[in-house]
Image (cartoon, protein in one colour):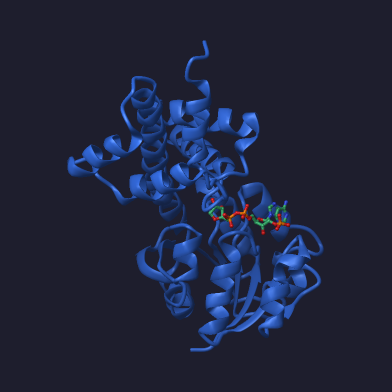
Length: 293
Ligand code: NA7
């Protein structure tokens, strides 16, 4: 079914996702804070809205893919915000990783408009987004999920669905928390091995032969080796995800000592000027630290 979709947030992930919605035949209107990031899509036939409100006006569904919960509020709230344009019976799809608190507060705001919230935080990097190979953790009322499922199918390889938006947001944070720990531990292993004369390629080879193997090590090792730290997933966003996991833990009375350490490492990457680099930049930071007290 062809949907009328407003799409807000054309960053690393949003732009290729919106493009896949366009390719699937949905009627696409876009808005991005930095308007020029929408130029390529507009050239391919998408309409450009002047404000988030105009982007949401009369659409069947409004997709948002922005950095974090503050950016989400910035595009939803106010006289020119998307909520002002969202129609009763419309659906807000939050692709961002905005956390459990935002899933609850946004759900209330959307319900007050007589609309529905579906959260669909993304697993996967830009390459997966371009190939429509993302994994989505989808949460929201069944009827709303049914309506937007064709669009979500057009951008993803797999979906894990539930009726509860905050729980879907929590599930995404659980998975990302493991991923960040893996990248941090791998960077640490490279610095440890390297400082003692063990080659990184050898560490990778043995790691991949072990039961701890994962494609993430291979992907990140290639980037680290090539010195290519252009963001597939920004270190600053990985730090944000760790923060959101800690906030959920605080609300639920859970403890996350590993997350705390990994978040500090990612925070150090951000404060050392690597926040806009790929999360693999933690390996470069750990390498920088070798030999320093
Ligand atoms: P990017 O590439 O950092 O893109 C972030 C997007 O969010 C981009 O469109 C930004 O607009 C937008 N943004 C950020 N802050 C604001 C505010 N205050 N107002 C409006 N728009 C804003 O992130 P990714 O695409 O990699 O990730 C998006 C989400 O998916 C994130 O939650 C990840 O954790 C997963 P800009 O272009 O800077 O004007």
